[in-house]
Length: 118
Image 1 (tube, one colour):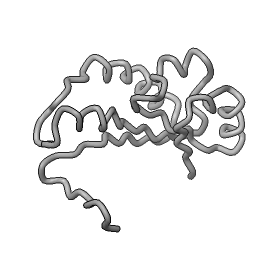
Image 2 (tube, one colour):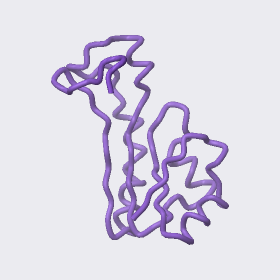
Image 3 (cartoon, one colour):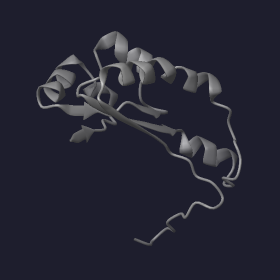
Image 4 (cartoon, helix red, strand yellow):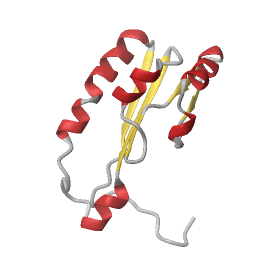
């Protein structure tokens, strides 16, 4: 099982989706500030390219860090934006034999790598 997370919106098109589908490679839908939302992708092409899917919710970490560097509570309520993922999740579960979703959450007790460390 392989998955590809594309971070260049210009690469996201039906041709790439078809290529990934030919080889059963999952396209990773993601919630990242500079990437199109799932509803926009679905209008251009079918983003489910394999019989399983991996979803990544990243958000706008740099934007949040401009507000705070304390990660012990909700800083921005994204309930409405995350609601747009409900249809994606239902469709993924309906069509895929397996799926995973990974919210990127950083809290006060999450270990963080320090600058300059490996």
